[in-house]
Length: 181
Image (cartoon, rainbow, N blue to C red; front, top):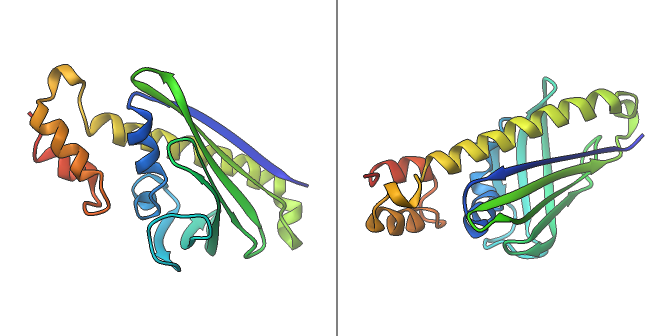
């Protein structure tokens, strides 16, 4: 039995900011509830063929798996695939403009459980759907709270926030709070 979970959310931030943040593997633990650690197996930056190892906790089990980037179109689409473990999976992020100031992000996880996990596919699908909703809600809250509307944020704070979203600063919300007006 296949598992195919698609979750969508609208985030009131521009597409480049949302996609840059969400596609940065080092930021995954900030918004993915189940991801505990990330390790690059190849050197950054993100390119097709990049390999990234994740340690996660899901349904009470510790999971270690390595994704390989199979598609990367900045600000449009990001696809990673793993063949590791009892649940080979493909994860896709897609971004499009919901309007001129908001981004529609779609997160899709699909795979075919093997072994004993095959019998748990309906349970896995439901748990994955709930986790994806929570994760996208956390991403939305993080990005929307870390930068107020243009009317309430100074030019200096916006420029500083843009620098904080680079690979240099890993904690966007903490970095931005220092410059909030």
